[in-house]
Length: 204
View (cartoon, helix red, strand yellow):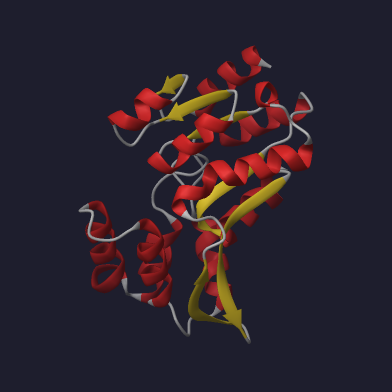
C-alpha cells in the first residue's frame, strides 16, 4: 500500500463497508500518525474491529483497492526481462495475494488475517513486523540465490529503509517523509511506477 496501490487503502474500504471507519479506523489512524500507537498495534486494532465479518467481504474490499498508475506496466516490463518480483508488506495478506495472482508476482509476504468458519476472528498474525522488512528481503535473497547487486527494493515508508540497506539499489517512491527520501539511492516523487521502471531497467 502506497507503492503498488493508492488510496483508498484496504483498511479504509473494509471499515467503510462495515460502518466502522469513523468509530475505529480513522481514530486508530490518527493515533498512529500522532505516535501514540506502534504500527503493528495499529494493525491489530484495525483488524479486531472487523471481528465476525465475512471473510468474503475482505476479498471484496481487496478487489476494490486501486492500483498505482503504471503498476501493471512496471511489473510486466520486469517479468518480460526475466526479473523476479516479490511483495514484502506490513499490510494485509489478502491484498498482497490479489496482486500476486493478478500481476504474476513470484512471492507475497504480509500479515495474515485469522479466519474461522468463513468469518474474521478479529485476530492478526504479524508475519512481517514493521521493523523486519530488511530481514524478510534477506531471506528471499537467500531463497532465490540473489546477490545484493542483483536486488532492488522500492518503498515509501520508514519500514522500507531496512530493505534499502539490504538491497543493492533502493528507490524511495513518493517517500512519506524527509528521512525516507534521504535513504533511497533514487527518489521518485511522481505517482507513476513507470518512472521506477525506467530506473530499474536501466540498472538491470
